[in-house]
Image 1 (cartoon, rainbow, N blue to C red):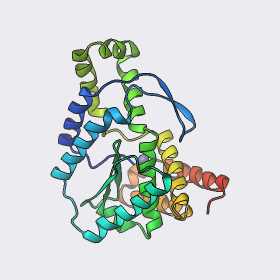
Image 2: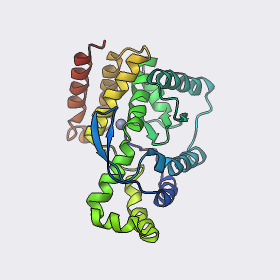
Image 3: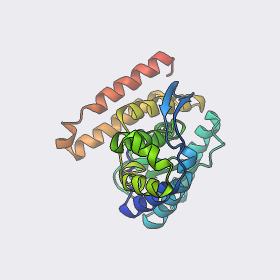
Image 4: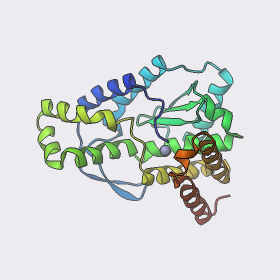
Length: 255
Ligand SMILES: [Zn+2]
């Protein structure tokens, strides 16, 4: 899901720290995805910036103190993380007071869900679909990939190579771009589909019902339609996304 909770101040601090992170280069095979990725940075390079953005979000946004809600996302998140064997990442969770149902993840493994989302989901399986999806974005290094490809298409590979040899230039070039790279842009359709698939893999390993991911995305689509009909009419991707997920669940023999 897109990181819609981000406010400018959060993005700004993320950008500043991101500009200072080291550049790594080249094409890497991502085992979880089964494909190669072009990465100029990786999750590790984004960790400091992501953690700073998380701290800023916790400080500047209204965080829910509802003990049951917080315990619930932690319980579901931990169960997925354990089942997926991803305990090497320091996961953290928070509930943000926000009516619109949404969730986001930072590349260092920090997951936020809104009170609106918790109100929308009908069971823990559906919540697991959301959290599993966000975990998938991290394992897939989508933020790093998006950062890398956007940097290349925006200023050219030559500029990146030049910048990486000169710290000052790197800060200038990547710092300016960072505003739209780190946390503000929605993920691409390919990234969303990959996160959906990884998410249901984790759900199944953790003993959640994969079919509830379909129910969840249908709820989200219906909610979107009722709130913003004019946008929904030009935004047909919910249906094709759900179809793709149904097809994947069938092909894997999940239920
Ligand atoms: Zn997503």
